[in-house]
Image 1 (tube, helix red, strand yellow):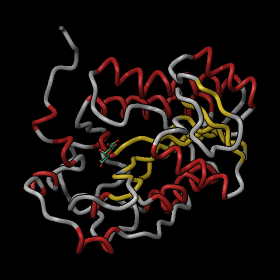
Image 2 (cartoon, rainbow, N blue to C red; image 1 turned 180 degrees about the horizontal axis):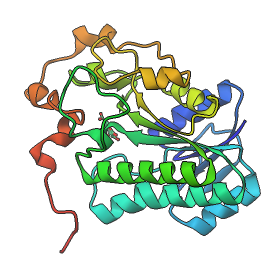
Image 3 (cartoon, protein in one colour; image 1 turned 180 degrees about the vertical axis):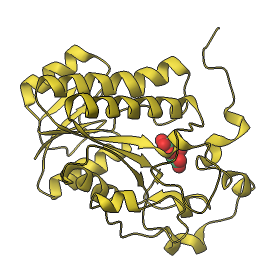
Length: 265
Ligand code: 15L
């Protein structure tokens, strides 16, 4: 499959481009910055929020599918979050419709449901409950994917990613960690699942302490193999651990993130 990967120079992008290529996909890289050293294949230094530039990439490279990882991976003011997550997704979806591309895998985030209080299991039926403007952007982008799935029959898998790191770095991450290898497994499954329509999955590894449901991912063929527990003995407890455990979004759910949506300075 010819896969256009946006945000291909980012931390997830670098892992996913290599991993998908290893699994036999042809990768077309796209990012605002030039290709990282070692990237082998076509590359477009383009801002995904520019619909003309995105359309030109589709016309030139004819992808079969899109993996949309581009976007600021943290909190920002509301207009910036909207551009980063919603406008970029819209530009890609419009180009997909124009060029008959019917599959998109989206790097959504657990922060789309970040203010969901801790319970035994949070699944894909959790209502949108963002914890930040970042989370609002992810909810809105998921809404757009759902709209294009219903209107145009696009298959869109929103992966609500947890803590993507080479190893878990906090007590919270013992529940929320997504290993590099499992991330590649997740994206590949979401790319190749039969007719998912609009679907949501939780992007975490098979963590012993997980409380986000892995079943929606398994239904699409995502079988995680790693478990953060193997690192548990090396994780130092922190003063925020208890507060961070109270909501899906962990630190993003705490008062430190409360601020106005619009910058008036
Ligand atoms: C995310 O979606 C963020 O991009 C990342 O910075 C972490 O906050 C991660 O979630 C997480 O919840 O650990």
